Amino acid sequence: MLTSVTSRRAALLAALYIGLAALWILLSDLVLKALDLSAANHAFFSILKGWGFVLITGAVLFVGVQRILRRGWSEGNQARRLLACAGEGLYSVDLNGLCTFANPALAAMLGHDGPETLLGANMHALIHHHRADGSPYPREDCPVHGHIARGTRFRRARETLFRKDGTPMLVDLAGEPLTDDRGRLIGAVVAVRDITEQERARLALMESEQRFRVLYENLPVGYQSLDPDGYVIEVNQAWLDQMGYRRDQVIGRSILDFLTDDSRAVLPERFAAFKAQRVMHGAEFDMITGPGRVRRMSVEGRVSLDEAGAVTQTHCILTDLTERRAFQAALDVTLSDVARADAELLRFGRVVAHDLQEPVREVVSFLDLIQRRLGDNVPTDVAEFMTYASNAGLRMKERLVALRGFVDVMGQRQHFQPTPLAIVWRDTRDSLEARIHDSGARLEADPLPTVIGDPGLLGVLFRVLTDNALRYTRPGYAPSLALRVEHEAGAVVLGFLDNGRGIDPTLRARVFEAFARDPRPGDAAANGMGLTVARKICDLHAGTIWIETRPDGGPGTLVCVRLPLRAAREPKADRREPAPA
Image (cartoon, rainbow, N blue to C red; front, side, top):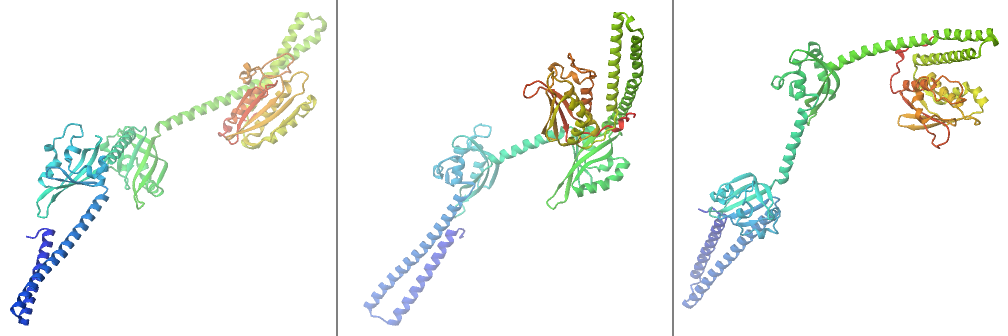
């Protein structure tokens, strides 16, 4: 049987040769008969016939062999080029396991200088001599060698080969038996694919998935995933702990099974809107826990889409609002109680500041009346005592007036609005114009911005700080006040820079307390409430106030006030009562 390409080509060449030879013999015999040659001529023509037969045989053999060799060389060259360009490593071995062919990709993969260095080598001993754990790998135990010896096709995944430098390499192997033109087994051809990087990527992916799984299961908030029909696909451990279920009690069930009747009624509409908008923010539902209690849950979610843009599943985070709502209700009650107590305290302070002024005034008046009635008949020590008592009464009256002013600021309804500080500064100068003129004071200011605040309270703040600059001066020096402005992110810092006597650095925090002062000989009368009022106004505007040394190190004080350009919080106007007229 002509089972190989070579045999078929040889048979074709033989048939061609036989046909040409038969044709030559037939034609030459016909020519001899037709010419009826003499014996001498017949012998010559017979010799010519024989040499012609030889020439035909040579021509046929030359052409046939040439074509066979050309085709074989072309096919072989093409095969060699294909093998050389292959990205995978390829090699062939004979039945003894000796390498008969190797492509450049395999040589580069194994760290050899070229394919020729592999030819004739025992491939098992060269690249497959140990197992992945480092133990020896005898040839007779190697399944690859067994497949080659049996002539069977094979595939081996995740085999370990060793490079020239001894480093291991994870590969996939595929083998095909190799036969000659008669179909006899002569070896095998083996394809080698390096999967080292692929394995590293797989391990990295597994590690990443493991980290994600650990993170997912240990999230402090509940997570649930639903399919497009609202059936539970996945929940994490925090969800199970919140709701009091086992995982097998949840997966595959409709989310409706875990809602109260009221929440179940609104879910279809909300779920449809969720899938349409692709996002859900702050939706609240009443959910039924395993023990049968109702928990108020806030849901934040997004959806996953397929390539066509259809929703495949939802991803939602659940926050339990039950305790938060209870805490908020308790906090509201507490704040309401504090507001009532605050209002009561303000009323009490207002009453005290108002009602005690009359008794104090009467005490001072009667002491003055006694001094005038007795005249010079009053003993010296008694007159001195009466003077002390009268001065104490006057100080008490001043403090009551200051307390009344502080209570009025505390109880004033606040009207926060855009307030140009330039207008506040102008009004402050106008209200203190007489004192500024009499003292010869020099006031200046940088361009002032507009802030969100209460114009009346900001006016009090400016008057208090300007009044202090005019009051606490150095003898022999006219007062000077410069209002400096620095801008910060979302705020403005006002610096009230005077040239007065300054404040003791150890008392800079204490002077903001009620009735606290830094008294010195010759000071003008003061009640010690000005900076207390200033700090309270800054608090109401979510601002701050503090005292620094002058930047130039000279005498005087720098009072800094930071005010937000926008309202930082809602004013608590409803918790205050208006000061009585």
